[in-house]
Length: 399
Image (cartoon, rainbow, N blue to C red; front, side):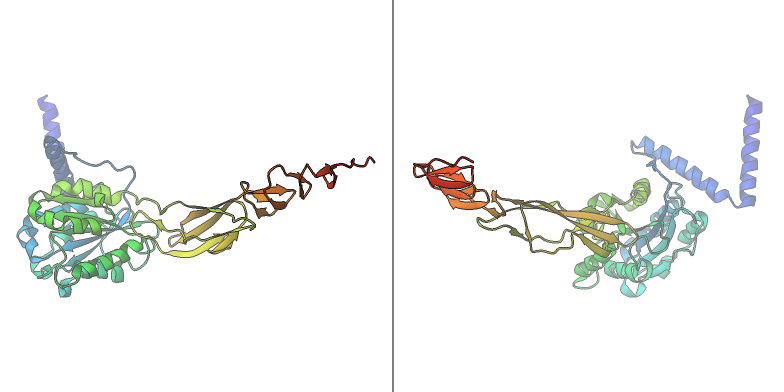
């Protein structure tokens, strides 16, 4: 037993020396920290990690709040959280995995792109970048969330996902903030305007609300509106922010829901008496994507090539709207027009008030019958060969 223990100690010592010589120590330390965190989460009754169903490969833009209210927690809590986030194995920061860019926002003049995609691929190098952030260089007086998303739209994600950094990687925004947008009178309106532009580019927005519970209560609803959906918002106190890391990674790495037609459009019309068609009108169908917005369509085709309003004959008619979206996918949203009517030949008739005789409409008269297209009183006439009338006193000719 002592021999085995000695071998283990020597092996660990060798690995430690080898790790330092190969520059691998940060990875071993990260693995140790993660293992320790998992053990602590399990003791607290929470999930240690969130298992990924497939490797994570996203183009992730972190939008980080650096307003003055963050200052007290930046060095002790926020920076270690960022280091742990980018070295989390489930996020898989690497050239072929998740790539990271960063915008740091506070006042308008301090809000800028701090890191572009492609600047850093390695997780340990990215962790060093996060650890080297200096508060004095990034702090600002306000919380210009509106400008942060404006920068994201104009400088980072200028096109519809995934046509920005990598065409095979979904674009995701992770905003980390401790308060409401603040700095100008109409800032909430301006923020949502810029957020909607981001969503319309099919970009998923995940949000982390940090701060004490009283603070979070004040801006929770705003952050839920900013995120793609309320389910993509997670919350934590600054002192326990690292506990939400597995959830943030899972929500970031999950694939966005596909685009779906917003609603099923089906309308029923009745052909008016004496007419052959019904005039129908309908709205162009709409669709929503997993980002919560409507991804811009490169083109729209309609089959058959008709527009509203249009005259339809009796029966069920389907108009297919095919939206070819930026990024190569497409979605088909159908419109169904149902036309009903009791038809006599090519015209509708009221079967309660009218009778149809071989395509000819007659106003209903009690006791009357059809003889081909003719309508007659059996007391006065006789129908011969279902085609012509003779007097009731005559006999039908024999051929």
